[in-house]
Length: 212
Image 1 (cartoon, rainbow, N blue to C red):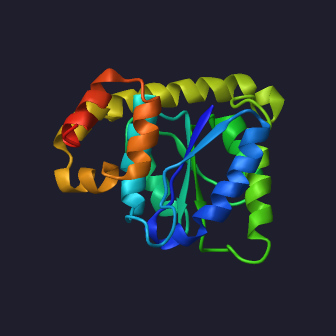
Image 2: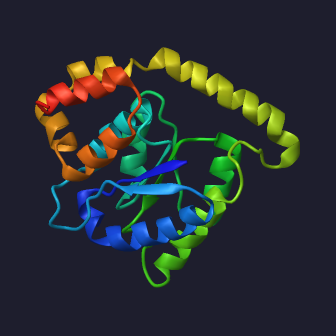
C-alpha cells in the first residue's frame, strides 16, 4: 500500500516526527510512505482545506492508496477530505480509534489532532495509532460477529457517496484555479504524483494545469 502523508500549515513543524514514526510502522508491514509536506514551517503552505483537495487528487488518480493527514484538532482536515468523492476519512485520536476505523469503516484516510492533546509522549501515541491501524487488513469487522453487517453498510455508504458526489474531473474543472495551483504547484507533489498516478484523465488535467 502506498501511503501519502500530508501536513497543513499550523502543524508543519511536526512533519519530521510524524513522517519518521509513520514510516517506521508502515515499512514494517511492507507499505511505502510518500511525504507530500509541508516538510517544515518554511515550506510552501497548505491549509486543511487544501489537504482535502490534495488527498482527493491522490486517491482518485491512484497515486496513493491511503492518506494520513491532520490539523490542530483533526476535525477540519477530516471534514475537508470527506467533502470530496471516493474519500472516507476518520478522525483518529487514540489507538483504539485507528483499529476500529480500519476494521469497521474500512476507510482510505485518517485525520489526527497534532495540536490538541499533542504533548509529552505524543510520538508514542502516534506509533501506537499507526500500529493499530496497519497491523490487520482493513474491513475485518469488530466484534468479529458483526463483520457481515459492517461490510454491507460500508458497501451501502460507498454507493451513496457515488450518488451524492460529483466526479473528480468535474471538480477539478470547476474549482478555483488559484486554489488548485496553490495546492499542486509543489515539488513534493510533482515528484510523487507523476511517479505513481494511474488515472490518465487526471494526469492529463494536472499536466495542463501545470503547463507541462
